[in-house]
Length: 225
Image (cartoon, rainbow, N blue to C red):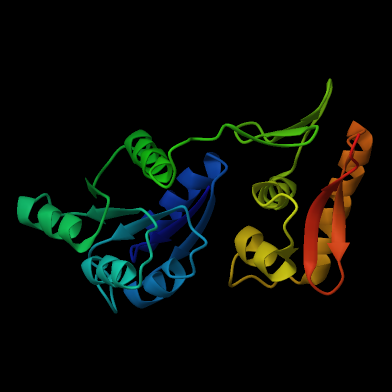
């Protein structure tokens, strides 16, 4: 899961990011409403955790503009104010849920998980293609009786490919969704992790391979039996 955190209190933002990372979620952090809106509109996040009181543009305006731009990413609003009119306003602007500070990390995570499920009718525990099965909870990649545990970025790259089987996934999309839109990652970073994954597919004896589409990206391929 990839989560965007928009919070101007730096210590709280860092704490929220750490909570997400401990659950093996990818988390990006921005500190004002204008940046928050720009990141949210990129469409690369599963959930947005959004503070109400922000410099530049408040949380109500951010979520209102997201919905105006037809961006349906679930939004969890955070606020220090526990007043009913604020909650109603946030939900009316298009937010999906609302939490008042302070809150327990366990409740935050439960609400984030619930929001991520609203994007589809089925909550996937694993992804499969041909003879491969990738566990989304343990990062374990299995083929028959053999299995290996993937590193974090290996897992994110393969998850992206398995989500789009037989479709070409551009290198630019991999960099944006795995490393983040503001990272310094380049094509050779992607190539390195593709190489790691190919070695693990060989070790597993899978008939699935990762094909290269020159100057474009990668796609999963399989030898038919």
